[in-house]
Each structure stands twice: as C-alpha cells, then as structure tokens.
Length: 306
Ligand SMILES: [Fe+2]
Image (cartoon, rainbow, N blue to C red; front, side):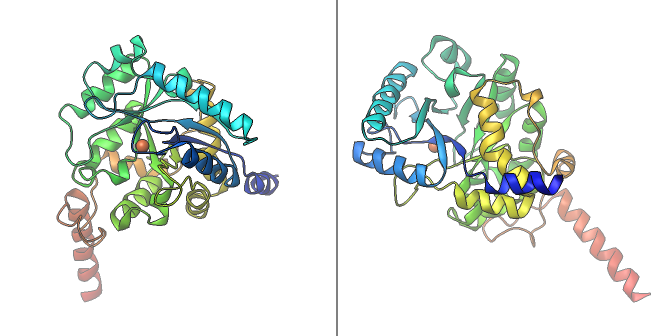
C-alpha cells in the first residue's frame, strides 16, 4: 500500500509556487508583460498550476500596496485567459520587515498570501535585524503564520542559526528557494538548504523567480533534489500539500510538519557546524557542535591508541 502511495506521489506533477515576481513592472522581477507571459509558460511547463504573485513591498524602494497588487493580479490573469495560458494567479507579496507590520496587514497596505493567515516576510539580507525574534513572535501572537523567505541565502544565518530553530519552534515557517538545492545561489546557500531540510526547518520551496533566464520559475529541479534527499512524500509536501493548505487558510496544526524533525532538536539545542562541515566563506562559526566533533575525535583517537 505504501509503495502504491509513493508511486502516485512520484507521478503527480501539479505544484503550487508561492513566491514569484511575475507581475510586470512592479519591482525587480518581470520587466514587462512579455517577460510575464514567458515566465507563465515556463511555469506551466514545470507543472505549476497556481502561482502567487509576490512583488516586493519595501518602503523607500518598492511602493507596492495590497490594492495595487490586487489590481495587477486581476489584469495579468485576464491576459493569461486571453492567451490561453492555464496558470491560476493568487495575490501576495514579498513583504520586507518593517515597523507596524501587523497594522499594515490590518489596513490592507500589506498583504498576505491569498488573504490567508500566512504571510511572506523577507528579513534584511546582510545583517541580522534587531529584535528579529520579537518581530516574528509578535506576528504569531497576532494570529499570523509568518513565512520567512529564503533563510539559506541570508548572510547572517550561519552566525545566528540557533534563531532559525527557535523561530520554527515558535510557529514560523521557512520557505527556501528551489534553486538553492541545485546550487544556483552558490555553495553556502546549498549547504544551508540541505542542512535546514535535514534538520526539519523547511516547510516550503518556491521559485522566487524574477525573469526567464537568470532566475526562471524552476521548481522541478528543486523538487527532484528534495525527493532524493527526503523522499517523494516530503517533496510533494513542500510544493503542494503545504502550499495548498496555505491557499485554503488551514491552521498550521492541521498540516504535516517538516521532514527531519529529529534533527531540529539539535538545532534547538544550539548546535552549530564545525569548520570542516562548512563551505569556505562560512568558516569560523564553529561553537557547540565543533566542540562535540572535537570531543568525538579525541575519544576516537584514544580508542584506537589503546
Ligand atoms: Fe522574492
């Protein structure tokens, strides 16, 4: 019976992409409607049935709002219908961390995924934001499920990895970029993507596509790699089961948790990678895990010497 279920899972190609900069001219994603149309055709060829349009909302740089995004989604959906492109669109945003986040959601200035309790949140890329955990805890306390976008690509995560485990434990979901698993963002992002998957810190993968060449809507490759590492069932969960639950606004308690949950206990305990485990560039962030590895090496040496 289990083999039958696994076989069904393997052949299903329908997936949902919850992070995509496909709306034309709103941010650094699709530059015009032609790019949007090509991205959509690539997405359909990938088996993507629904795409969340998630342009940046970043005060001072990308002045998008809930209402402008809704209008742009409706217009693009109409164009897809005219072009017979079978891609369903829902609205959302790649919302950068900012003050008054909850009130922004309540007023409609900020926007969640398909008006659900789930909202994409992008932290700063280079430096850990002050009050990171308090920010996310406040969102959870307000009834939202924050989805932290592409933690594996954030430069401060290697030195603050324990915070990721604590956030997951507190109810924050993690969305990784599919391309990270294929090495599209370098060895560091690949290392952290694999590690987070192994340690139960990956709820979703999405394309975060911006165009058709440099950052195309490629979900297939990421799903294949997750399937090899975590199994076909979990691969299906990161691209369909959990995304569908989000669009249906199901409570997170009713959704299967991430694979690799045994590992998260290590993350919660504050384990950190040894220098030998880290790709070049992340080295020097050893810590408790390094100490354990060193202790193990010492015990092994003693064992073989006697
Ligand atoms: Fe994005």
